[in-house]
Image (cartoon, rainbow, N blue to C red; front, side, top):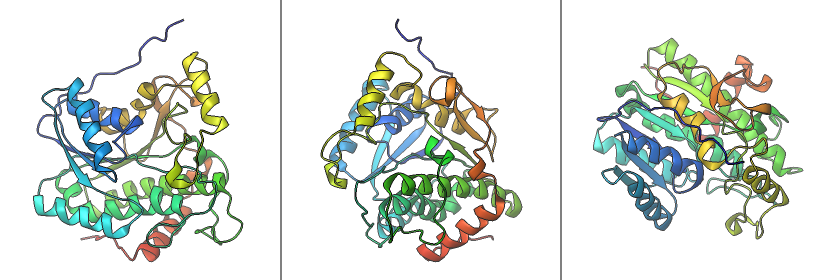
Length: 314
C-alpha cells in the first residue's frame, strides 16, 4: 500500500537567514529545500563543494527562486569552524535558524579529527559546540531558534566520562551514542543559559527516527567500504512502509522544532509513530540520559576545555 505523504505547512520565512549543516544530501538536503521553498535565505556549510553544488541544483528544482549559497565547513576541524564564523561575522547578517544536522556514524575503527578528538565525538558534538559559540552574536541578533539533531542512539549506552576520546577499548556504537547524548545535553543547556543570560536564543532537539539515509551506507572515507547489514534492512522496511520512516518524513521533526509556532525550547521533537521510528513530528519525552542538568553542565565544561572555546555571557 502506498504511503500517505506526511507534511506540515511552514510559515513564510522571507527575510530570514537559516544555516543548515549536513545539507549536501539526505535529511539535511530535505530540510534546506523546505526552508528555501518557504522563502528563507539558506546557507549550506559543506565539506565537499561538488556535493554542495549538486545539492543547490536539486534545491532549485523544487524552488527555482531559492536564495541559497555554499560555504566551506569541516566540522572535524576547529580551524574550519572558526573560519566559517569569521566569514559570517564579516557578512554581519543575523541568523534566525541554525539546524545542526550533520553527523558521522560508527566508523569500524577509531579515527580522529584534525584536532585529535575521536571522530564521532569531535564532529557530531564538539564541532557543533564550537560552531554555536562562534556564531553566538549573530544568533543573538536574530533571536534564533537553534535545533540540534540527535538520534534514537541517545536513548542507549552512556557517556564514557573517563575516556571521552575513546582512546581505550573503542566501540563504534557506544561512541556514537555518547556523541549524541553529549550533543543533546548541550542543546538543552544552551536553552537554559540563554534564558539565564538573556541571549534571546531558543534551543531545542530533534531526532529523525530511523530512515534509509547515508549514515550507515558505504563510506570509504571513514573505512566502511560496503553498506552495513543494518542499512540494507532499514531500506527494505522503509520501502515496504513497515514501522520506519523515509528520508522525506525524517526531515520533519527538525523542521517542526525549528519553525513551528508551538515548538519550544528545552524540548525534544521526533516521529510520533510506533517506537518513534517514523510518522508525523511531535514533542516527545526526553530520553533519560538527557535529563541531568549536572551532566549537561559537566559536558559543557569539558567541551570548553577540549575546544578552548568559551561562550560569552555578556
